[in-house]
Image (cartoon, rainbow, N blue to C red; front, side):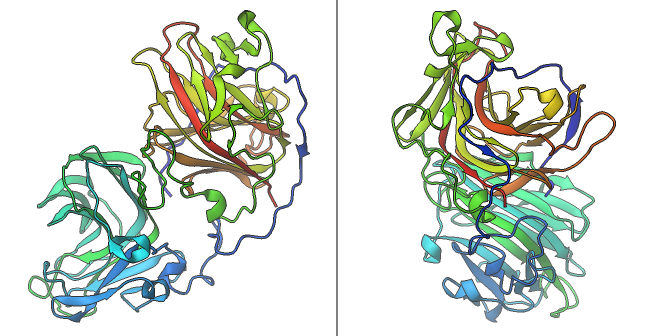
Length: 527
């Protein structure tokens, strides 16, 4: 997946903390988990060819219907649920040879709908398990389509294919359109609205993401914001597949062997207004559901007892979390903040209405939590969001990280698997610090298609094979080994524990108040 950008930098700051006043309740070194759960998706890099027999084995097609280039004139074949769950039609809609994608093929002589002169093998968004056609507004809620796909064949004479689109009540709003080697974003009837690249090579996987909210369509290509369209309309829905932009009236040969083709490897829809599977959310009072979880997608098993659903009120559970325990500035439960900037205080982490809220105050007081579980390898998933509550000032830095139990990150490493510099950020970042590393070399990953003010599921996997980060069930970084004369292998931290922080980099004034909200924290063992 080419969603990320990686750079290496050296930064001369440290994330200090006083030694914990209480010892961890348990030390985890070689935990065992059950075998992969039934229905769980195979982890990245695993051979799935033998397992996938029909397209629904590869893609979640629950809320889709399929239109094929077969049937009667202006009345093409449509496949809906529950038939779609077991459906395959060679060559128009089948699992690809590698078993990791679905092939959509539409020949130029295929049957078309009454509203188009071009054939398609294409999915149309539905709701309620495929019973009803989706129809949403661009000005209400947040609506997101993410598709990883590759254009694999274009027709002769007119090598034009659409791989995904947003359709309105009457016409298409925008589409991703390939013309030869030129890949375009369209707007209404303007087919060449924005050129993404003039050097697309057939078979190259790309990731497209549409985010529609507040009368705008943000279009991301391989994790980078590519274009923003102004659009105010109702009756909208997503489509994905192969929509061949050629027919027997404008190209030759007119045959089954002249076709457009797209392979789709991953496909998801989120609706912040409570529709869809709930990855992004815009509910100001709390998350609508648990969203798409890496733990479920990859079969991590049951959460360990140290996990916390925050289904209580008041201070955090002292059996699961350590909080600041000093009396810095005369306040019990406070100690010096990050790099002595302000204070970290227990009072700034409070549970209510099923949510942990960590606050960063204008005076520099902020929250800090450390899970009472020291581990060598593990898996963690956290559903969280953040936002500024003040109008101006220097911003707090939200983090989920694995901190070494030795408190020496130069010796043992540090894994900041979620770190960003503004609670209102539109980019997810990660900084992975090598162990045995006096010069503090690190790797940086960034995904600028994630709105951090919305609810997302952030997951981290630490195994002998490396470090992997996920957002809403999708991998956004993987790092392994890398030892040289300056540092050790990235995954070789001897032991660490989960911390949640809202860091103050500024001092005691000129700071913009903020909130860091957590719906749940789930911890899993590594088999």
